[in-house]
Length: 69
Image (cartoon, rainbow, N blue to C red; front, top):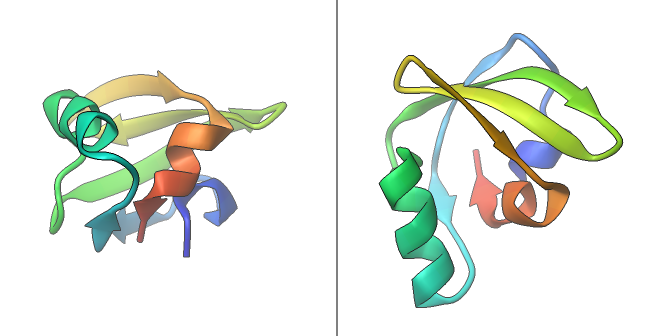
């Protein structure tokens, strides 16, 4: 399921990163890699603040939909 549908506070394992190569590379540089843990800290208006590798990152709904957990 895409990261945008995950409940807040639940740790999830990243299964796959979708999208074009440049988008996948951008997300990987932010720490979103297959097998890594990600937790949604808060969600507002489709934008998410997530905890990945002990760092908080803000991403939009479009990017969150490309991260499958």
